[in-house]
Each structure stands twice: as structure tokens, then as C-alpha cells.
Length: 240
Image 1 (cartoon, one colour):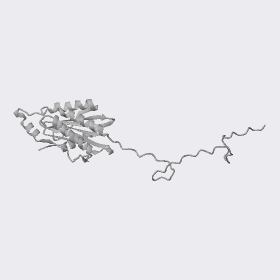
Image 2 (cartoon, rainbow, N blue to C red):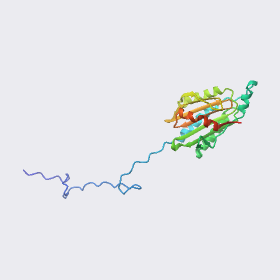
Image 3 (cartoon, helix red, strand yellow):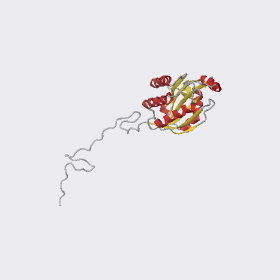
Image 4 (cartoon, rainbow, N blue to C red):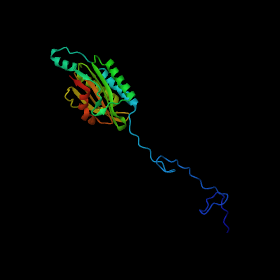
């Protein structure tokens, strides 16, 4: 019995394509990539380094100012507090050029944000004698530190610290805030864990008779922040 003729568009043997059949489809050429031969497969994209959006930094800066802005700075009236008053009056805060080996970030937008933080603290903290706000490190290398501090005569340092911590706990979900060594400058200090936009934070705060301040380390835990806290505080706060 004779075989039916092949369909004009059916697959054909490898030794040739008879008339009436479509030629095999051609694959589009892949553009050559730099450093690759023409038509070679494109390599995987380079991994992007984790960064922190500036909108996150702006939001956090505003939060820190709000937490510190209610600090009640007042002059002491009792003679037995004269020494504390003198120490407090000689306490100053400033944003150093480097912080624990990290250079202050010179990005114009972050510099403007730092200046705004300082201006807000000067206008909201009662009777302040100084304020400091700045960013340090390299966000592209997941090494970023943010500071906010104000100096003045604190009426109730423990209360100021507790209120600042409460504010952070509500807004940044800061947990495990525990008392840590405040260092040679004295006063009270706490460090704990926080998070913003999925980025872990190591948060430390301090308060004494002459200042109140916070240090936020991005991509770090509270335990990691604790190891550098005393060094950083000593570079931000000085007492003559």
C-alpha cells in the first residue's frame, strides 16, 4: 500500500528540505557584551550593594529630633548641686570630622539634612548651649552612623533618657534597650535593637547633667553598637 504524500509543511529529514517547506527558524543574534565574543550569552548583572534611601534617613532624622526636642533643660537651684551645674555648664557637643574611624559624609543632601537637624534641635530644646547632627561612614559598604545630640543643663537626665527611649521604641520598634556602661563622662546610657524599612539598627542613647544624645548604627545590632558607644560618645561630647 502506497504511503500518503508528506504534508508540504511537515518536518523533513536532515539531508535536505524539499520545495514547499519552510526553512528552519533563525535565532536572533545576541548582542555582544563588553569583554565577550559576539553572540555570547550575557553574564549575570553585578550584585548591587545595599544602600539606605535618603527618604529613610530624613524620616529617622526627624524622629531623633522629636525624641530629643522635649528635653527639659533648666538651671539647678540647690547648693549641693553646684558641682553638677558646673560640669553641665562645661559640657559641649559637636560633630567631629571622623567618628570611630569613619569620615563624616560630605554628600550635599545629607549635609543639608544634618544642618536642618541642628537647627531644629536649637529651636526645640529649651535653653540648649549646643547641638550636633551628622552622618558618618559609607552606606554602599553597609557602614553608616547617624548622630543627634544637644547640650545644656538637664533638670532630670534619667527622665530625658527614658522619654527618648520610649519615643524610639514606638516609632522604630526598638527592643532590648538595656543599660550599658556610660563611660568616663558618666550619666546613664542604653543600647538596643531597632529596624527601619527592613534595615537593622543598633541604637544607643545617653543623658547626663549636661547633654542628651543618640547614636544610630545602620546594618548593626544593639550589641554591636554597644562596643563602639563609649568611643563615639567621647568624640561627640566633651567636658572642659
